[in-house]
Length: 469
Image (cartoon, rainbow, N blue to C red; front, side, top):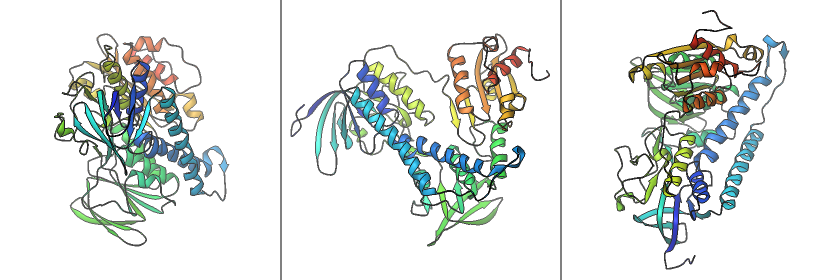
């Protein structure tokens, strides 16, 4: 490899080292490809550095703070509980550092070359990689674009020290006394819940009729109930209009029920969605087809309309989930290697780390019916599970969606503790083409939350043990 005025020739170039890009690079290297990955920021991308991982660390710290307050129901009383938030942030940072360092080690261990800089496409086989000082031309046989997404900024809520995106909310130096959250989706609900657990007075403004619109109302209702028990205020069908910043806080104006209202807080967090990072790559130079949202169009192997270029993750259609990006990264890498790999979105789980956790995979009951399936929805409550009762966390349920004709499992929804872990078994059941009877006949350890899967399957086949039909 000669760097200078002459182009550097590459076999496979991966643009972006987030959970899509670094997984694609490693899988490509495992198939024998010579791989170079380019990242303009930190290895691990948004997910590991300012998204999935640090947010879950903050959420866990919030749970610990809440539990430290004691529980009269369990006869546990505590006094003088305090939170050193600088220590919380220090610990959160250590988690991020371990994971990002681990990813860099995995890339190097798989002999992936790592280049720092921003990529600009010159043509379908050429890019320029630029940093603050230099520009280098690279040519490639194949390229996987995995540049991710960024928060949408509202015109009347320009980001500042007091108007925060998710990154800003994760990196506060103190626990806010009051926090306004604009947007009651995944991120807004998770971070709102986390700060509520630390004692923050949280107000969530959601423009739609309900928070967590992608989940069934029975599921989101449990989250709303828990948020309100923590002192949070939830205002739906509320349109945020503007913010007035002061030295010590913000005053947010919004409209709800035909009335103009204001709420004051230390900070306002804006979480109204994300936009794909496809606008500064020079893709127009290559003729790559995109939709009106800036998402790149791909085929079943993640290939764009330009044969040598693939795209994965938040820059293509579908939910902006890290595990979807990783999955697509493997497909693209294997397709480049000539393997018969194709994407199948039948069982991609979606999880909200709210309180309680929500998780879904496959079809919901409503979606299954709209797709023309004749289905049975079988529900089992956490309140009938011994482990949930012993955890003092009995709010919630599992719903299993099966085809009436043969009992095939085609979907599942879980609201309750550890839903994020429990959903994987249901995803496997869907992928493996299992029936409710298969799941019911699988012996589950007792007492565990995992038994709820077996119990829901028994409801589906008409032989429930721990609830009355």
